[in-house]
Image (cartoon, rainbow, N blue to C red; front, side, top):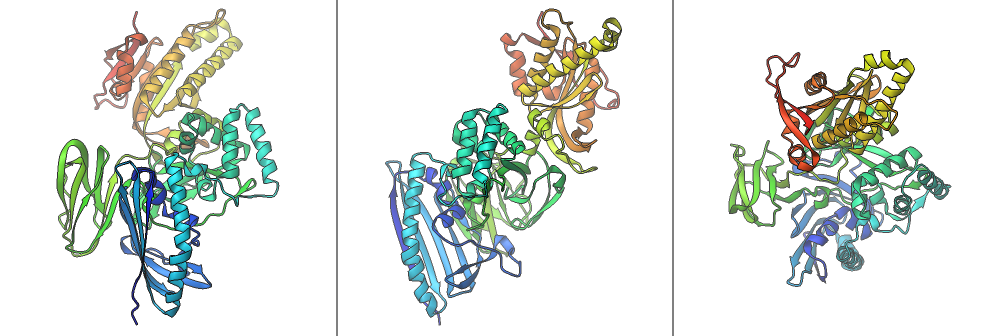
Amino acid sequence: MRYRDFHYRWEWQLRSSPEALWPLLSDTNRFNRDAGLPVVAPPLDGSAAFANGRRRLRFRRYGLTIEWVEEPFEWVRPIRFGVVRRLTRGPVAEMRVTADLYPQPDGGTHLVYQVWARPKSPIGLIIIPLQVGLISARRFDAVVRRYDEMAATNESPAGVTAPDARFATSGRKRLTQMSEKLVAQGSQPELVARLVETIEQADDLTLTRLRPYTLADYWRVPRRAALELCLWATRAGLLDLRWDMLCPLCRGAKETCSSLADLQNDVHCDTCNIDFSVNFDRSVELTFRPNPAVRLIEIGEFCIGGPQVTPHIIAQQMLAPGERRALQLPLEPGRHRLRTLKQPGGQALLVTDEGAHEINLRADEKGWSNDELTLSPHPTLNYENATDIEQVFVLERMAWSDQAVTAAEVTALQIFRDLFATEALRPHQQISVGSMTIVFTDLRGSTRLYREIGDAPAFGAVMGHFDILREAVDEEEGALVKTLGDAIMAVFRRPAAALRAMHKAQRRLANPPEGMRPLLLKVGMHTGHCIAVNLNGRLDYFGSNVNIAARLEPLSSGQDIIISTAVRDDPKVTAMIETPENGLQLEPVEAMLKGFDEERIELWRVTEKS
């Protein structure tokens, strides 16, 4: 017997805009938790993933096991989202949920939230009106109104208190002791107090994956300060660090490990059904969570889909074979991509004020165009599925979140190398770290120095020069990788930071305090892609770009810095040299690099103006 659908429609007039409400309402994992829904899990046989992003899931409710196949969520940010669940076990046959956010002239939002549910049995006729019509209706209203208040006051979920926070035995005592230890070690007391407050009060969903830059933005403090605090807190035993391996398409954490030595080179994403190679630049993110000896975190998922799981995806739509659909949506300026889950590649899109206001986007057997199409910030997109199978169309921003602390970034920081000296890859493992600026230095005339002033004084001068280099490198957020006799190798994420650091180091060494001998520092630097390796139990860097950088230092006189064109062409380096107040000038260098005879590598000498 087929029963009629129950239909529930709730409406709210909210103060906040759709853009402000969207990150809260579309976080269906948090919404379901806040609405009192149970934790979901894969079926007992473990076969959760289906084609085109479908999932088999289950939970227990009223003593019953409910299982369903969940269609991929569909959404257009920040306008609407919805999902269909077809139940395979339990008293309900199908459930459909939609949420529509209509902007209002006064800046508020008219929210319409709807649920359709069709019973499968007489029990379903009782449960649906009880659960959805009464219990969920009251809870949804409370959650929506609370989210509106949060959005109106710019409150982050990180600031939401958890009334049921669970601490380990003596956990609060450890929290106090470790926070006092952090302050004694030099951490800012006000930042330590904010971290303690977060650990004490934040809910489990927030604490499961603490992102330092997200905390910094919420606390309104410098990002470097929040990151350093989390690193020190890990060494103190207050936090645990974790390396999340992110899928390049959905950008979700597919595997997590507590040490670089446990990283896998190749990882599978069952959501996107792809295998991907891990790299430090994009697919490994550093996150934290409280140490279980302090705060106990109950990890549970209340929804495995939802738009906020993949916030870089602006719109996701499923089209049947031959189906057409028009979308009108706001887009940020910049590069985007349209792809489907079943086809390789994607269509490159550029959003500019001069772009087209309407465009046709067709998925067929020919694949995507190699041309980059231009769109206006408020276009109409006409989708067409010209294949003989259903397609999930995914429109995504190409820019990655700037709130992620990547492995490439953190491993190039001196504080990380000082606090976690044993963090290294497995022997013989090689992982791309993206583009780095590599610096090699050496003291000019160090051999003569030993002869002129004796071994002990010369050794002290060399050790002192290492301290100055380390300080200059750390000030510009770089890392000293290793020392080689009187020389060093250092890495930076940005060329301008490397140039500033080395310029400062040269000036400090050439103009020491009275009574100390001036020293000349030869410097060479180059920017390019390289790989991370394990060398003698430490994280090191390798590749042809590292070899190029090593060959530049001997060309330096000690009163200049030899840079490659890759460094010179960085816009911030160009601005630094062209700014008159910096007193720098640039001239070309004629030289051949050993081992690179067949390559024409342009070099430049940076000196102070006389």
